Length: 156
Image (cartoon, rainbow, N blue to C red):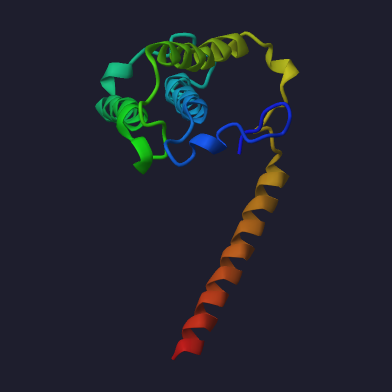
């Protein structure tokens, strides 16, 4: 429950009528950040044009549009079934939500200009580390197979 400065529950008087618009806004911002991050995550090698080739992947476009449209309808018309505010969000709240969501694209662009030596490098394992990992994995697979055989034997 969201509380005021004095510790009193802010939305308690309204909880029988509708979920809070504030929490609906927070939910919407979170999902919009994820939606825009889907675009940014398409290119992982510091490529600046994240929209290059986006229209060549029909499945991505379809899923992205379904999520965007679904989010709109959930927030605006989901009401008590989806635990969002009965009246949805105002146009001003939608604009603010979209601006915050687009900020994930801006952060993505900024992070692409951070020099690589600042971040830890992943994927620089030695051949010995790779062999040790493969052996560990094989051992775990053997244990799992043995456990599965023991369970099958116990059932019969």
